[in-house]
Image (cartoon, rainbow, N blue to C red; front, side, top):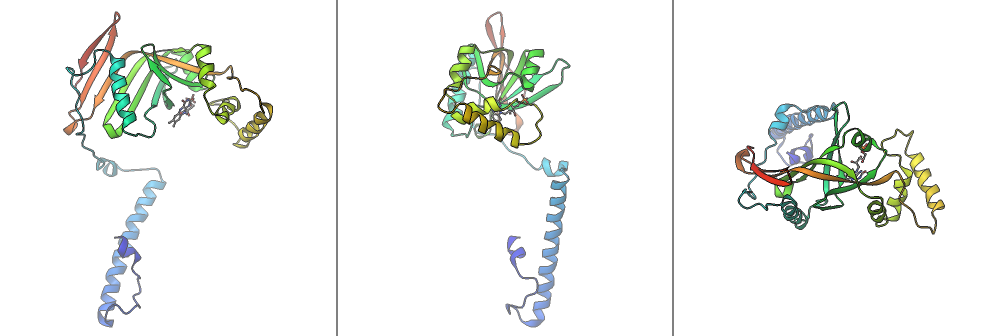
Length: 264
Ligand SMILES: Cc1cc2nc3c(=O)[nH]c(=O)nc-3n(C[C@H](O)[C@H](O)[C@H](O)COP(=O)(O)O)c2cc1C
């Protein structure tokens, strides 16, 4: 197809005898126009934001790399997570610690965004953010959240649900000091989730802050810190052939983790 697009439409280069040249010309022109029409249609459907079910239904992937059996998983979901997280790290994924965080406001309306996992142990899963942005306001109204890791190269996802608490000020401050200088400044410059007139205001604030903190230690802003999601449920999902995926769920009751297999 690409070759057809590159061929000249009026063939004056003498590749064919004159009589055949017109037929070849017509064929090229027809193929060229057909190709242009289908590209145009595709462009239109992309630019008007639509994509038909037919376009998407052909996207199909078989999962076949690994399996997950309730007999083999660790009895402790944190230890099981640790095993999978090591696999994700060893697989060289760009950001294995990237996770979707879902929160819900008091009216029940959910919202989701990506955040970075910065630590985990049996107390929970920690991320850092602004305490006045949308997610934080929602967590104030409803302290339950869900996390989702997706590691496509391993055909795995992990779902975690639980109550959320703030990390201690000491933990937040300690982590803040490990951030690069510009990230420290941007935590001061940004009132996360607020509407701003343009990017210029951020650049200006950054310049002012660079000046203000020249040769000084930058403290963590009071409106910035960590949250810890304390899991009450985990689900480890392993993609399998023919959509018969493995799903192993852990739920916490009375301090004991129960392990069950879910239907895909
Ligand atoms: C891969 C990735 C990692 C991110 N990590 C963080 C993070 O750790 N903390 C954070 O506040 N925002 C992070 N963001 C930006 C958030 O997705 C989001 O835009 C921001 O937190 C504002 O969300 P909110 O308005 O719901 O509070 C990340 C975005 C991406 C794409």
